Amino acid sequence: MNAFDPDGYLGLALRLKQEGKARFLAISTHRTPIGVRAIQSGVIDAVMFPVNAAHDLFPGDRGLDLMWRKDPYWEQSEGGAGPAKDRSGFTLACQQNDIGIIAMKPYAGGLLLKEGVVLDFLRGKDVEHPGGLSLTPVQCLSHVLSRPGISAALPGCGNPRELEAALAYLEAGGEERDFSAIDANALWKLERRCVYCNHCLPCPEAINVGGLIKLLDSEEHHRDARVRTAYDALAHKASDCTECGICVERCPFGVDVPARIHRAVEVFSA
Picture (tube, rainbow, N blue to C red):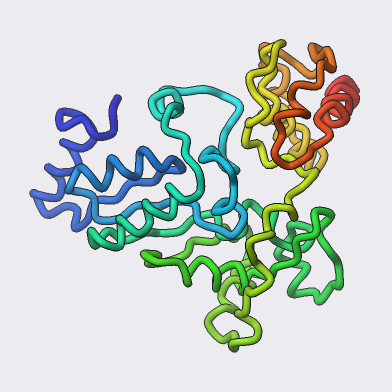
């Protein structure tokens, strides 16, 4: 069902607001075209949208959250993928139309943190992320909240200590909040690390490369039966790869895709 259908979800939301059961209407999306439609509807008060230093520099609009399964939501907006400047234009449009932006994914799924783990900052570990990223949760939040049109940042906290790491922003000084390390060259820091953007597609063997590597990363990080079940359900698996090299040529981050595909065969065949 179309979220903006006046006889569907939108109609229901407007009725609830009219009845006094809802004060404001908001929508959550990872896609700029959907966000633009929210603005154009004239009835949305806030949008929850991914904002972070890595996502803002991606060459496309799919970002970190493209899942391996297609659904009507993605199919509806697939043609609307746009560059980072479109996302910036969207946030500015929200500001001009007095629409609040609730920024999600401020840590870019952990890619911007040392080892991708919030707790390392609280433990005082002197470690570096393999991809060369070394921002703190405070720096990530500072960057997000400095963006035009952002009303609030919504970091994901899995436990009380991660919540403490986020709340540290409130008492942090100027030096702790300084995110000047983020510059025009920040994109290179993601080199050789798959961010599931799927710019490598289409694959001649119809492998969903980004989705497959996302499953591999999940399995290597924390074994979970649900991940293996999701992999088993894939119509085209890692073993279907013919090493044609097209994905390597297209990848904007220099990922050794065949190596990750080989690793997926090893992991999911074990």
